[in-house]
Length: 352
Image (cartoon, rainbow, N blue to C red; front, side, top):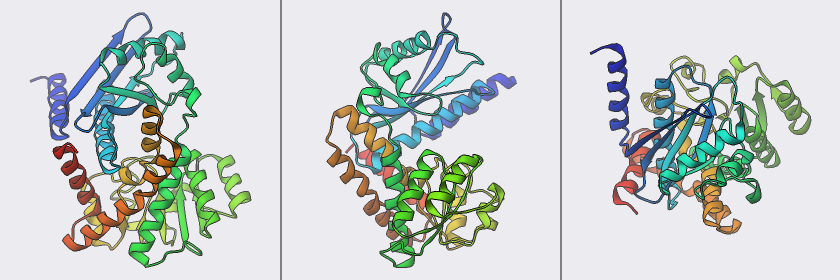
């Protein structure tokens, strides 16, 4: 078997391991669109997940990304008790999109061919304006400009509620007053999280590659700033990864001086075994796909036209879901990440 066939075999094996249902490909020669839609599960409802439009070095890299992210959306929806399955789209962005309108019209036509099994939304590299274009070709889209499609405030609030749950379980505190939180990445979600934590009395240490973001946090929240490489070793109560994934790995875990990890970033554990390593070190890890589900909850509500009151109620329930996971982890002496995966699979397998 040649190298190309080996890669294909490994990718399909990976999809099988993740429990996948469908993979769809679209190549539009007129616009240059090359897109992949992964539908992980539709047991609980249509698969909602964002459309990521970024440059990938290889098709195989894009496929692994869409498979991993779609599975995460399934688990996220299941643990948030949403009537949704899990899916994701990635567009292999070219160096230049010559006609963005035609480009996303072609993607909208692609989504329409899936018959409602996949609902698309904003993600890295796409905007509500792109969703408006897609909406001219399919109704299976949310996050458009007419529905206030920014989910960031709800994502940030869900992370804050998660911090509260973890602090309650690990430290026995109902208040965040005086708590020291180190935030890795203070972009849109991270900055909103910093605002909430500061308003609740937390002390903040932050890092980011954007100097303007750091300046804002210093001026508004009296935050301390450290170099990106130094954030892991900050002596704090809570480490909050809100930037790139895989930040919890063999190199960073030995540096950690926190009791709790709660952040907005996706796929924080570089490998599944790192959840068990954190357990052994006595660090409470809040599984990221539970913590950051506020954005999905909001997107679901927008698609089904649910009232904002219901959105707030579901985001607040992240607190209770995490306490259940933490308690079960203590009782079974197994990593919270493993427990969260199992609970999600239980709900998916029951289809309820």
